[in-house]
Each structure stands twice: as C-alpha cells, then as structure tokens.
Image 1: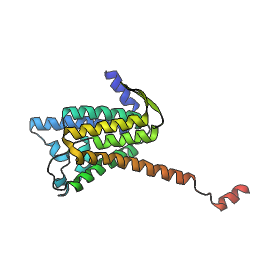
Image 2: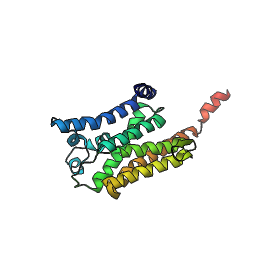
Image 3: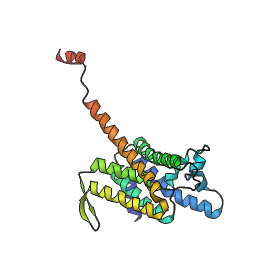
Image 4: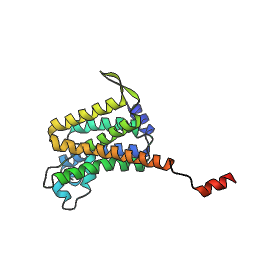
Length: 219
C-alpha cells in the first residue's frame, strides 16, 4: 500500500501533490486542534458568510481544504486524488491552483452573497470536485472508462453521473438546495473558464498573418 501511494504521488506534478497534501492534512489538523483545545482551525479557515463581510475574505477559498466530517473528508480525498490523477497530470502548478481556487471562490461568493447573515460554518471540497469533473468531461469526454457495476461507459456519462451523485450526497447530508447549487457553481465556473481558454487558443491560431511578413517570406 505504501509503495502504491508513493508511486501515485510520484506520478503527479508538484501542484497536484501540494493540493492533495493540503486537503489531506486539513481535517486531521483541525480535529487535532479541536480535541486538544490548542487552536481553532475551523474558526480560521471555514467559510462563515457573516465573517467574510467583516473582512475575513480568505475564507472564500480556504473552506475548500476542510472536511465537514470524517466520512466527507475520506470520500472527498478519494475523489480529489482520483481526478487529480486523471486531469491534473499535465497541468502546471499555476494553472491547476488557479483553476481550483476559481471554483472554490466562485462557490464561496455565491454562498456569501446569497446568505450574507449566515453564521454557520461551511467546509466542503465539492466545488473543486465539480470543477475537476467538468475538466474531465471537456478534456476526455469522448474516451471510455470502466465503472464498477456499470461496465464501459463514456467519460461524459461518467462525469455527469458522478456530479449528480455528489449533488445527492451534498443535498441529503444537510446542504439543502441552495448550498448544493452554490457548490455546483464552482463546476460551472471551471467549465466556463476552460471554454474561454479554448476560444482564445482557437482565435490565436486563426489570426491573419501580417502582409509585410508574407512579403518578406516571398522574397
């Protein structure tokens, strides 16, 4: 098992390893502080909309590195590792972190604006999970993958199915409609960002070459 984990981490780029490490350590450290009464990581990093309006804006992104329970942390860690292994292998550290933070901050803003007086703390990696599922759909949608119990299906159907499963878990674990949709907005932001990037790349490839340059080439 140790060899498998070591080989898996070695196959990831630095940015993916750091992202996975920060999330893996977030919940255990927060629980350690809570049990020992030495520090309150939940109070510092969890998203509390009313606190954001008083200036604690970092919570818009840091809440995504905490789990709400042991089960939530373990399941989210599994999906994060799986999706980073699929779509994060070829992304630079800057792009991967920018993409994931965009998703987390988008969902954080939706929650903060939609529930400005909310005093409950929110800890969830779902926004990043949705964004990575959106990237998997866009980048490898035409490929096929084996799913236990379903056999071989297209990546598109697999990504949609996993996103719906994540939404159901979020809804029935107490998130409700608003919080579930707010966290899904992180995936929408990731999708839109990749769409804009693809459009920009296509526009650059289709630019008309300057006539003076053509003249020089003809000479």
